[in-house]
Length: 156
Figure 1 (cartoon, helix red, strand yellow):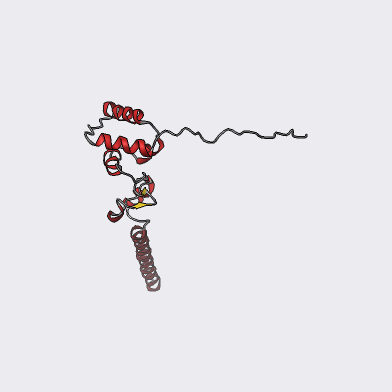
Figure 2: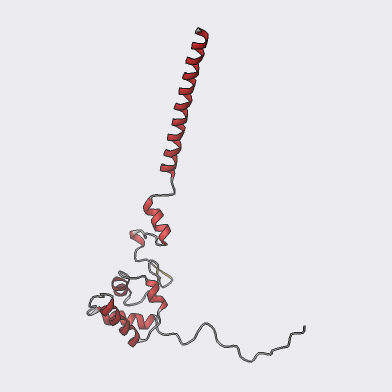
């Protein structure tokens, strides 16, 4: 009977040892996943949203005539436009709209009446001049119509 008791003691000791090893492996695996991760939660939020934080030194960088952070054309009135327009919506909304002076002013009035846009004061003229100069209406559509083509009949 002593032999059997010794066997059970040894078996319990091995079983406890295995439990401790498994617990350690589990803790190491969780710690590795936690600390290795795919970046901080803020970085993941930026990647998922499509917006990436711009370092402070690149905040107003211009490359090839384009304001890098917004994609807007670098010209007189850019600063005022960025400060007043992109605080509420993306610069993409500006870029995709092509309006004349009356159209841009009407758009501003609509935003003031329905979207709580503040009074732009002296900046309004600067912003409108910027928009008209850089984002005027485009007469040409997707492509010009095809002209003077020699059509041929397909043989079956």
